Amino acid sequence: MLSENYDFSARHGSPADQGDDAAWADDMWRQFAELGWLALPFAEEDGGLGAGMVEISILTEAFGRNMVVEPYITTVVLCGGLVAAIGTPEQRAETLPAIGEGALRIAFMGGAAGDISVDAAPSGDGYVLSGARKSVIDAPMAGRLLVPARIGEGIGVFMIDCDATGVTLRPHRTLDGGRAADVELTGVNVGRAQMLGGLEDASDAIEAAIDRTIAALSADAVGAMAKLVEETVEYTKTREQFGKPISKFQVLAHRLVDMKVSEEEARAVTTLAVLSADAPASKRRRAVSSAKSKVGRCARFVGQNAIQTHGAIGTTADLTIGSYAKRLMVYEASYGSTARHAELYAAIIADPDTAGAGLLLSPAA
Image 1: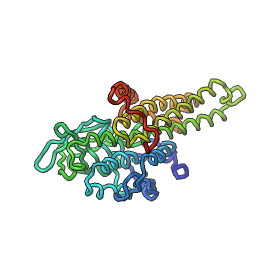
Image 2: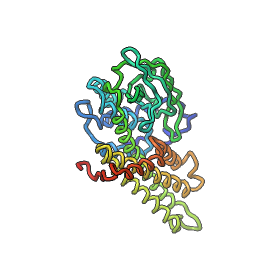
Image 3: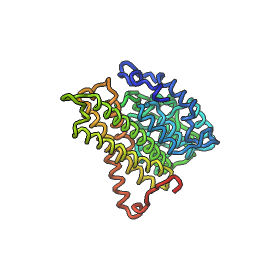
Image 4: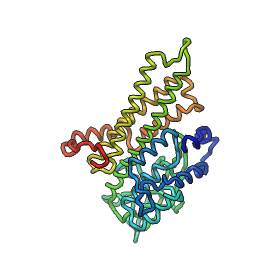
């Protein structure tokens, strides 16, 4: 469906051509709902299909291959996953079916685990939220925000409307053609009913949701890498130099092999992260940080060499190569950089309490 209906030239034009109107995504979003994709990971009692991260990763890899820019991972995997994990029955009933039907999109006003920029001050029967965050992904297309906020020593998660009093959004385009906004909260009043699960410390749930998000994004990156490798191989078969295709030159043949090896290495660590998404925290963190670090390095290698192999034409906006490479660059910077996750992984395997956690090799393990 994506390859037949996703028109690259129309959906990845210049910002001046497309403007900031998100209406262009509505038709595709409705198709996502009709196909059941938006309800895929939610429990049946919440109006979902009860699928797991394996099914999600299959879908997001296809998104990466086709450069889907709809807010699927943000709304369904991250925000929907948080609501499903810690929301009250009333919160789940009000939110998850609406997501599944395509009627609600949610953006996450947070970054990597522990990266909190909003404070929640107790006020009467509720709280007052104040803070700001740059580049909240998918916020211009969202109707609501999930806001992790510090409450004393804990972290709560609040759901607020994007048009609530005190909420300011400044939309902009991201490097890969997506949409984001700088968001500022100035004295936003919220009731306790807007706090997910009524929990004043949802740190563990936030970390688990972000880890699942990283696993889904890694699958997306693998899809983008696979497409880059395919297009680069095809280009070398048709581009001629000195009377023969450049694929016949040994140095380029070796480069293509190295790109394919990087793709497969990224796929392997991503598979482990996906299978570990619901594992105990020590195994999950180890697998996810390993994937984020390795996939980030592979993504940069594949993206740079795809452009280099294409030559000057690879830098033009009219060719898809540059857009895929920019998508991979955004992946590198999302929810902790490649270097940061390498540090986290090193700390995990150096800690005697977590180094022996082992690897999860199957969903049943």
